[in-house]
Amino acid sequence: MKLLTTTALVAITATAAAAEGWKDDYQVLKFGILSSENEKDRLMRNEPLRGYLEETLGVEVEIFTAGNYDGVIQALSANQIEIARLGSSAYAAAFTATDGGVVPTLTTQKMDGTTGYYSIVVSRCDSGIKNLEDAKGKVHAFADPDSTSGYAVPYFNMVTREGFKPEDYFGTVTFSGSHEAGVTGVVNGTFDTAATYQNNAVDGIFQRMEEKGMIEPGQVCTIWESPEITSGPWTFRKNLPEALIEDVTAAIEEFPTADLEGYKLYSSWTVEDPNPDTGFVRVNAERYNWIVDMRAWIKEQRRSGS
Image 1 (tube, helix red, strand yellow):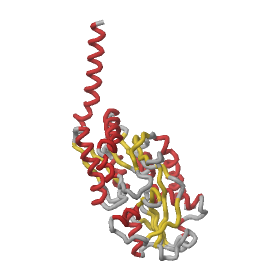
Image 2 (cartoon, one colour; image 1 turned 135 degrees about the vertical axis):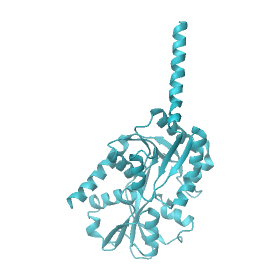
Image 3 (spheres, helix red, strand yellow; image 1 turned 120 degrees about the horizontal axis):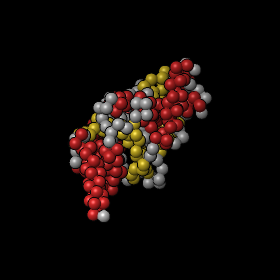
Image 4 (cartoon, one colour; image 1 turned 60 degrees about the horizontal axis):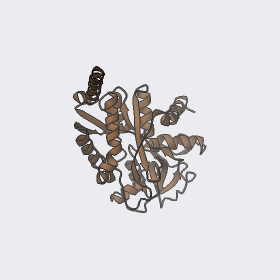
């Protein structure tokens, strides 16, 4: 019995050491964030999380940014970063690029328990464009080819639900490069309409731009909204140690309660939002299979020219 107890103790000690062992090989963790807003604001909003993870995990944590979505996806695929907060479509792109070599673990949950948001199309309120019918023949901007709400979902819905192919329907179709750039282009008259996202009527890209003083309130109006989109996941490389994935996932999961003020900055919390982000919930790859299939459909449409 004594031998069994000693053996069990050794096994437990070895397991604990193995769990901590990933830190020997990963003394620096890098997480990527997408280019939905300008780099200064991206870094500012994510700094509380970076600092919290560094202190909690006991390793150096760095934020990785790129000029477009594909830069973060390629960094994840090339083992240059360990983790990325991706939109659903960007996750699907990473899943495809790595032949399934990524693991989604968490997504954002709101106060009412929902885990989704919406793609919208916006125009200047004074443009006379009140719906997609009014936008026919106009200049339309999608955000980025790897954006869920800024490209994949609106494109898919325009073809399958609205009954038109954007390239044939609009006078010009282009990519703005980011959600903020699309909204700015609408305000400045570069684009007649642009695809972006919002969580609800008071919380989205153009509403945040109004709050930050980037655009004047009342200039931008929503002319179309998609069905609800599943929020994108925190995504890890599958070739990382399981203990690393679990430890980092658990730390992110606890961030909203461990540092409430930091989480409010990270999540762009405002007192006016009736349904703010409140934390994270666990997800798996199955949740995003429809997004992978949608991207494959879009790719086939491009290839066939139909």
